[in-house]
Length: 355
RNA sequence: UCUCGGGUGGUGUAAUGGUAACACUACCGGUUUUGAUCCGGUCAUUCUAGGUUCGAAUCCUAGCCCGAGAA
Image (cartoon, rainbow, N blue to C red; front, side, top):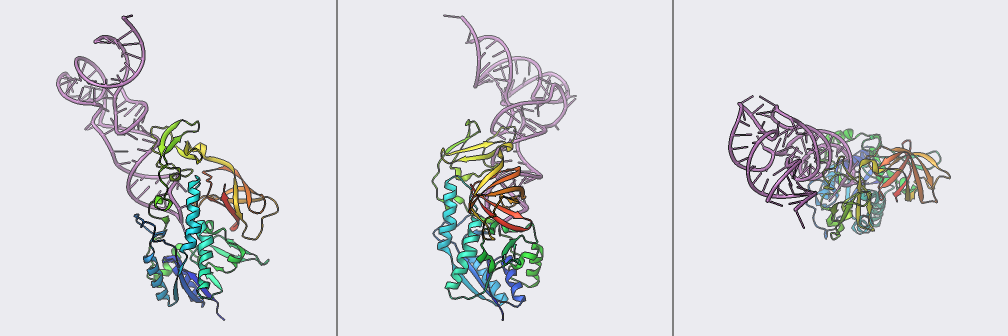
């Protein structure tokens, strides 16, 4: 008996090759793309490919891939959930002077949440759900599913999907986990997939974030640690901790970075790089993919943003959904709203949102 | 009005006779499935007008402007 696999297509190379590989392995494959773009939003002006944007082209690409592979293809409406969960979080976090990571929310609750649910609601039946993410899932001898890093360390996406739970992990397949990006492109090309030379998408949204946030300007001071005004801003949501560009403060001996966002007083606090290091941080909304929090503190490697080199740290669980992270060496730009993901070797042990 | 000091790119400084340096900002590009970091690149003929000199940001003269002081 063949398992039926639903593959989440994006219109890009990775998901296309994921579907290709599954098909070659003899699975019956169904393709689906989720629709998240809300036409009431202004059309982004920027160039390039982003997750959120008018999606006719992506749907067309995904459809072409499905045709090339000879598989079923469906468009699943996830707009409502996307708006409620991802965009809502995006706005509320920025409003509080925090820096959200929409990819984390989208993956856990839309791609690996609303999407398969919508598919089943539409009558599709499948045993597993696959995507083109660079990550791996392994089932241990103890029956527990573990999320592990991809072979291609540079492309590993576990940081974005650490919130997946046992139920989700049990039905997920990541066909690309053992491949390098270069190999994936090669496969796409050799199989004549129509999108083999499509550039990687990189952004969440390629327009002006203000279009999504819809916040009116709220000017305030940019100050140094002592509170001395150095410049002005039009809204603290235009800044994130560690940001250097765009401050417009000249004549300093060394570059200034955003050290803190003070939502209450509508101020951006800046300082030299040396002001950006934190020895520890509190993490909330913590999840433990294996099921429950460790009984005691654990030594792990913690990644506090995508492209951060994981840092040695000790995590002290506080109840089931909070924790305190103490870094061995202070880390730069520990940013509230971003995720801290805990790794033991290649395995994702848990993670949460930096408080 | 007088005296002293000073006027170099968007900002802060350097170069005191040999064709303008450094940092910051800004912009452009690269890296990056979070507009972060990081990396590369670009941006001044030195307040104005004369003069001295083979040659001046650097010396001289006048003007303009800024700061400090002065019945």
